[in-house]
Amino acid sequence: MSRFSLKAAALALAALSPAAASAQSVIQLQGVQIMPNAVSGIAAQHGIRVQPGLLTVQCPAPAVRSFTARRLGGGMVRIEAEIANVGGAPYRSHGGQQFVAMRTASGAPIGQRDFVNLDPGESFVFATERRWNPASEFLEGFGVAITYDPDIRLDANPQNDDCRMADNTASLSPAEINALFR
Image (cartoon, rainbow, N blue to C red; front, side, top):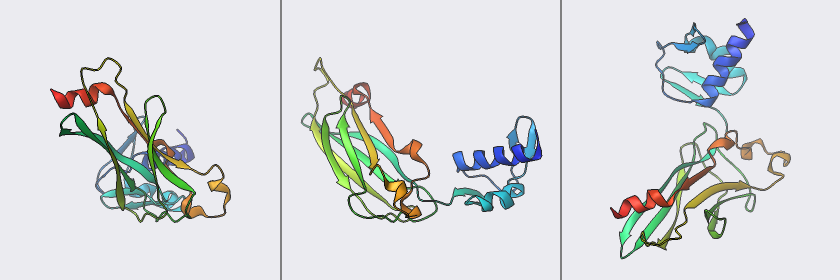
């Protein structure tokens, strides 16, 4: 593996998995070992901060942190999505450019909530309560998605460009919700 592709692979690993790693730990890439602090120079050039104990993506990254169901009683469940900025930079935008949408698995809207700004680590909860009968023959799951205005990347505001789009959706199956009733 060339020196450049090795650094690129380490950079990609750091960007895709901002998991905790000690300064003394070793990253394995196809049999080659790299100390995380060896990635610091190139990582800093690409917006990734490498600190002792933590690899963090330094960009705004709103994400669905969790999507859960909770049994309330009386045949009711609470469907709850926690939305958080999991990046290391503030998310700053304008109203109407992004929202969180909750839908049934077939796509029928349940509700939506607008949001504008999220500091790193800041979160909010978007929830709804639904009647649920586990014995019903035609049960349907739920989904949640962070949705952006189609031209949000063209508005000359890099603070509202989500750098990790892969974590913007989540779903709950009928089987997961039925398990609450056992």
